[in-house]
Image (cartoon, rainbow, N blue to C red; front, top):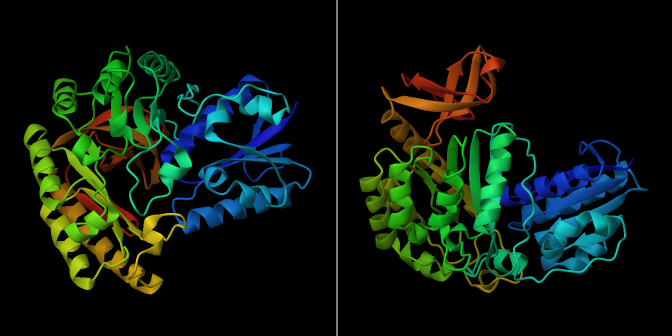
Length: 420
């Protein structure tokens, strides 16, 4: 019996893709090994969102070749799409698998000839197991046509395509039967989910129709794509978690325009106000890029001021990463790595203050916590409906259970803030 190990870099979409491919190999009788174990086959799912991701992808390929020089190394993910010749030249690489061919991954590895699918079709891969024992990620949308000037993803992931509603219902039911308490619907450009006349609201509604589903959450979503129908569903069904991740990227209109983002500060502010008016207590998290080409100190301060006005529950902060082949890579005013790092640290301090203020608003409230893993000192860690980290007294018997607790205090640790 042949063995295979999987290595995944990058986003939740990549993790979902790997889990689906892992399920295909398991169905065919392959033994699944850990990444640090000797295996007959290594499948590396790569990332190129940043230079660091691309470098780590190369490092992992080299590491797998060193672990077993005789193994077949198959490589998939965005690195294969954007630089196939570069990947193919790496020592040990024996197979490149594009996104459209992942559903035939077993046949490709086994050297069989298969009919390749059209790039415009969504690969209806089954949802597979991920390392998270309580939360499953189901990819329902692929591709992007926004073409933000800093982003390589539209070139790597291709055009927009979406999973069928029937497929969504089947996979959600499958995940519920396997014991997952919470399912997260994810995609590269999730708000552009389209299957015929159906939109993301219909995809969410289909998932919520599945008997036994306890929690549903959305992955990253553009603010301009949050429509009234989605908010109505969130109000009507408590299983649809009151949390939205809306990437801002910059709080300066000049930089937003240079990034080719589909909104300005005022439009983003109004959208957030509308969402909060409809869904009290909702947590809104975001992504921010610092050090974009041409971002002056004044521009950066505008971003700092704006994010504080919005009051995000959490920010993910990224120093701008120059990606060859994107318009931003050739823009004037490129900042030094040192300056980008300095701005990221300043914004991280602002973020911690915003997190605390949001958590203070939850003191005295009762929340439903999905318990995930051990924290230590007699506590387990989990997340509330609005995706806030909560520590719950108890042991491993609480894993993958939803418990109700009253929030009494905020615990500050080096690695972040927790509700107790």
